[in-house]
Amino acid sequence: MISRLFRNPMAQKRYQRFKSRKRSFFSLWILMLLYGLSLFAELLCNNVPLYIRYDEQSFFPVVKFYPDDAFTGSGRYSRPDYKALQQTPRFSDNPDNYMIFPPIPFGPLEDIDASDIAVSDRVNLTLRPVPRVGSVDIRENYSVARSHYFDFFISRSPPGGETLRVDRYFDFPPDLKQAIAKRFDNQPGDYQSFEISPPGGRAVEVVLPTYTPRKQPPETLRLMFREVAEGSEEAVTVSFDPSLEPVPPVAGLWQQVPASDKGVLLSLVEQRFDQSVGNYRLSLGQRAYVAAFAMEEVQFPYPPVKAHPMGIDSAGRDVLARIFYGLRISLTFGLMLVAATMSLGIFAGAVQGYYGGRLDITAQRMLEIWSAIPFLYVMILMGSIYGRGFILLLVCYGLFNWVGISYYVRAEFLNLRKRPFVEAAKCMGVPSYKIIFKHIMPNALVPVITFFPFSLVGAIGSLAALDYLGFGLPPPTPSWGELLFQAQQYRWAWWLILYPSLALFTVMLLGVFVGEGIRDAYDPKQYTRLE
Image (cartoon, rainbow, N blue to C red):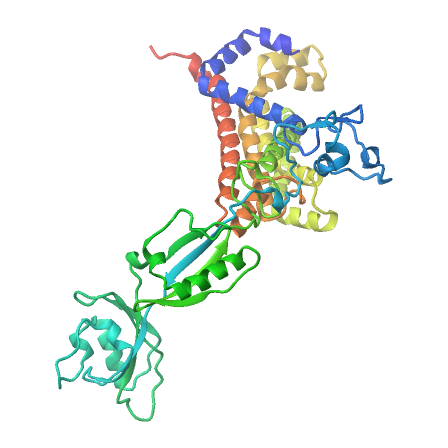
């Protein structure tokens, strides 16, 4: 049948037109190659060896199950941990024993051991300046009644005998003056913060605490001043190796640390190699600093490293392996869903379009009612009763996804059923089912073929969306949507959103390119010419 189809001149012309669209043609081959590789994912990405040579015997674990007892004699018939077995003296002491793992030696469900990830053995000492804080009690004319550490924030002292006034050192904005006036008028005021920059001085933050009216207006009002850190006084980090030497050698602020404080800091750095330590406060000149001690540790999700180029997810699983297996699940689900829904849609549309009349009208009303049922609610209900699963998701989605294609097939049958070749078949006594499937159907499949790639793209996107919402495949099934859901929980883990989104975007884009090529190949207007 396929060979007969390709011998058809119209089919050959359509194929050549599709082939001439290089973008669509190569997209089809890339999509087929990716899906073909994903079908053999166990041979390319797995934590189970392809081949084991052990005690002069050959084993093929990737195609046959071997219990733990076959290698260790432990009497356990569970699945062995091959990577742990490879490290045992019984296996490694014999040079004739070896294992051949796939190119990506990690499975989609394998929990990565944090100790296998190489991290820096350095302690980072961060010296962070403590912003200066002061307060001043002012009268209604802005003269100072009392102050605490306010001299840090003024560039000069008042001349002898002159009253200290804050408005001579700071240019208060109108909003701040209005807030101060309201408080002196004994009116309520919320917590407010203003950032001001005095001429030639440091930027400061002025804070007005919450004010509650009293029996008498206040005589003084307290303003809090807080220093705003500048770029030149940002935190300084010094790294130390186990020998307690700076890496690389540093100068500047670290050299200004007094010997007594430096000894305490080095002692805390040494302790940090073994355990967590608290912060340490010290003074350098007229500034106070807080020293924090940090050491790189493996916490999941973990960013990309050499062995895991796409990083590790929150459960300690390799992201590349889960994306690769997720590709197979997504395309398989999409192909099965589209094939099932199009079969249902073609059958329903063919019956409606061929017989027409009351059958067609009745079926159309029923389809309108059926399509109005909210799919997501049905999916939630079925999942809560029967549990989440691949087959359940395929069935539930397929029951609602076939309605659209039935409309196009029905329209084609309504158009073709009165054609002369159909009338001739009826006059010859050809049964209706043969007329439907042999005479009309081949001529009515144009919308089905052109919509197939777009329906596949929609099915893949829908599966990712359902997995993202938590109504798709059950955990720990590898899924792009599940990785995107993790990215929402760990927004700093950029690799959890970049690589799954890139995989989803690439597959959907390739599908759209293929669909565009098929649509252009079947466009009848391209075979006409305006004179």
